[in-house]
Structures are given as C-alpha cells and as structure tokens.
Length: 296
Ligand code: GRG
Image (cartoon, rainbow, N blue to C red):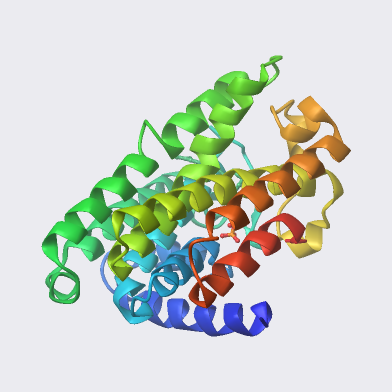
C-alpha cells in the first residue's frame, strides 16, 4: 500500500479535527491557548492518532468515530514533549523543527500549556459529543486505558526511571522497563483504544495488544538508533543528545547492529500478531515496517 498517501490523508484529518477541538488563539487566556496550539501544530508525525485510526479500521470500525480519542492522544503526547524539553528535564532547544515551547513562551507558560493539554484530552474524551458517538462503557474503558498508560504506571513512570538512570550503568530489564513505559505505553494505548472503539472482540483485542506492545517498543529502539545515525534537519530535534546525557539506550547497551536486529525482531512480532486479521489490517502492517525503517 502507498503509506505516504495514507499518512498524508490521515494527518490532514487529524489536524482538521484538532483545529476544531482546541480553543482558538484569541480565547482567554490567549497566551496559554497560543502556547498549546504552537506545539500541537508544529508538525508532528501524528503516529499515535494514525495508529488509533488504523486499529479501528483493522477491526472494521468507522475511523470517524475514533477522532476525538485520536485528538486526545495527540494532546497527551504533545504535553509530554513540552514537559520533557523543559530545563528541569532534557533542557532541549528544538522540537518538531522549531524552538521548544519554553524557549518561546517561557517556562511557566510551557508547564501550564502541557498541563492544559493533558486536561483538555480528558474533556474531549468525556464531552457530550463523544458520548453520542461511542457507547459509554467503551468510553469508560478507553479513558481508563489512556489514563493508566499516561500516568505513573505508564509514561510518567518510565520518564522517572529514565531520569534516575542517567549517567548510571543499567541492566537490560531496566532499559526495557524505561522504553515500554516512557514511549511504548502511549503507542499501546493508541492501538487498544482504536480496537475498542472499532468494536474488537476479546480475541482480536488481545492480538492487537501484542501488536501495540511490540510496535511501541520498536518505536523507541528506532528512536535510539536515529539519535545516533539520524539527520538533525529531518528529525527536527537535536541528535546525539542521548550519548551526551549518558542516557540508557539500546544502542548504548547492545551496540548499533544488535539494536537494529532487535528492532527488526520486534517488527516481526508485531506482524505475526496481525495474522488473524485480514486485509483491513494492511495499514497496521505497513506502519510496523515504517516504525523500524523511518528516518524521522
Ligand atoms: C515529561 C511526563 C513526561 C514524559 C516524557 C515522551 C516522553 C516522555 C519523552 C520524550 C523523549 C523522547 C524523545 C522519547 C523518544 C520517543 C518519543 C516519544 C519521541 C517523540 O515522538 P515522535 O517521534 O514525535 O512521535 P512527533 O514530533 O513526530 O510527534
């Protein structure tokens, strides 16, 4: 399949939906809404919303129904990037090819823009329009999955262990804990939410969970590799920063070739998990390969 056209089409749908759900730049407090929109519309790959849409399609669901949850996921992801870039964490100057949020709006506004994006995500998941589109029990499960994957047992927990591991020698299980939580959790939640909203039965939900776990970990292994061999202009952020900060990465622990091999193995696990699904899972198959081969 033509993945580029698929991505272009889905990105424009997600961007249109985000445009309509986020408060406008002149809505008070204007400085806060400007900062939120600055990072949301800075040109991310939208891989999490696209995975959610593709998982919904894979189980025969209507992609339009997943859009509020897809936007909510992108808001949570963007909040995490804004906070990750802060001086108290990674202290990065560039993200998505632009100066980071705190460089433009100041630290306090950047913190609050992240807080507001996280909160806005749950407003969107629970508003009356979403309730009209999705069965209340499905919404409850989706909210639970997304909140759990974003919180202390998911992404935030992974971020904490990542920070505590800087400059230390860590073992492989700790590295996998960091990667599956810091990055993998939101990717898994995206796939699971798409599957649930699309109407997956328990068997297909379990298969897509295996896909999401493997794809999520593969995404971070590829990210580790790109930090060493990637192109700064294409990535839109600084490269070489993992090594500079003595971060625990697959490349640091296994070396470049073994890390590449691990990424390919994870892609194959993801593809095998999709065996029970038919042609409708083709976008998910292409995305698994893209995650490993991507250059940005
Ligand atoms: C601060 C609570 C909190 C969590 C931070 C997401 C995260 C956890 C840290 C970001 C650090 C980082 C660069 C992790 C590597 C994987 C990753 C999440 C990359 C960024 O995601 P992409 O490549 O970015 O999907 P775009 O800009 O395309 O959306």
